Image (tube, rainbow, N blue to C red; front, side, top):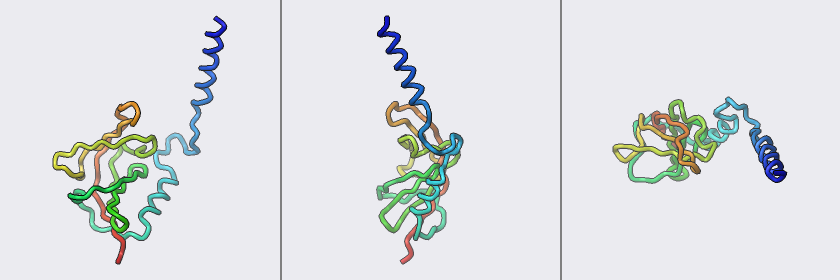
Length: 139
C-alpha cells in the first residue's frame, strides 16, 4: 500500500513539473518573432517573381516551415514560397508531418495540407495551399 501511495505521489509530481510550457512564446502566438526573422533571413538576397498556381514539375525540393509559410528550396538560387491558409499556423513547431494528396502529381493552389503528429499519427491541423511565389537570386 505504501509503495502505491509513493508511486502515485511521484507520478503527480512529475506531471505537475512537466506540464508547464518551456517556450518563452505567448500561448496564443502561433508565429514567433524568431520565425519571422528566420523567414526573412532565408529569403535574403532573393527577388520575388510572379505568383504561380503550381510548383514546377520534375524536381524534388527540400522544404522548411516558418509558421504557416513553407519554403520549397530548389538549390541555392531558387526558392518557392507558399503562404498557406488558416489552420496550419503551428506547422514545423511540434515535429508534425505535412501530408498532401494531389490529383495531378504536383502541389497546386487549393490542395489540402493535413498536419499529422509524427509519433501518434493523429491529424493535428489542416489548411490549403495559396499561390506559389518564386524567389530567385539576381545574376
